[in-house]
Length: 255
Picture 1 (tube, rainbow, N blue to C red):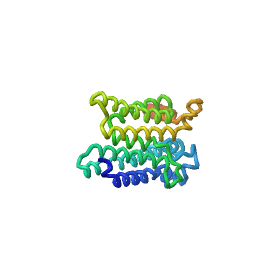
Picture 2 (spheres, rainbow, N blue to C red; picture 1 turned 120 degrees about the vertical axis):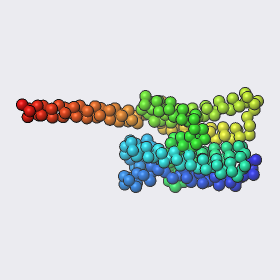
Picture 3 (tube, helix red, strand yellow; picture 1 turned 60 degrees about the vertical axis):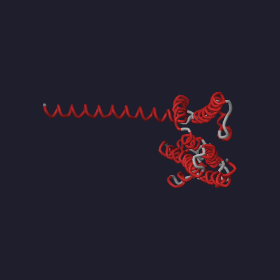
Picture 4 (tube, rainbow, N blue to C red; picture 1 turned 135 degrees about the vertical axis):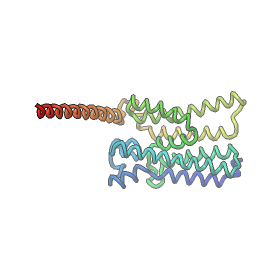
């Protein structure tokens, strides 16, 4: 029973929250760029702003760090509670989702920076990859296609977390259809995912308003990829021209 593990669950929640409070964007921008990311661009300490201000490499590093700080406490809770509960799925499943929720809460509302953090997208990818890897990967693939089409990270984020919520709701209906009712672990897990959805949608409320008004900024990913492609073609053309010039010079010398 969950009540037999109250203090362990509380400790898990607190530790996961504190891990989530460690903001990669702030640390990386100060360490390597000598600039606080909260003072430039959109001033949001998250992956998208890091990409826009400092480039793709810093954006990717921030994304990986934020995803890991969600995945690590989630997986730790899974294995630790699976061991101490002797394989009781009700206990370790709930503990995993609790760690996931608290890590994301820490990223969005970090105590170290006066409860002003990122928007929780990257961290939620980490926690849900740890909890439901195959569905989350499938959702991310579709989300990446949406990102490439729209060039708006907010659309990817909102689609992603809504799809995760729908996946869990459908799972509940399937369980009810098969067994006639949901088991004891399904209720708290569903509530946890609903809270996760509410937090991330709330964190993106400004983006939602701009999307409705048609004023949401593009991420710039399409433009960056297009420029890179064009640059590659130009490099090839210049290389071909150089080869032709060398050939002409060689022919002239031969003559």
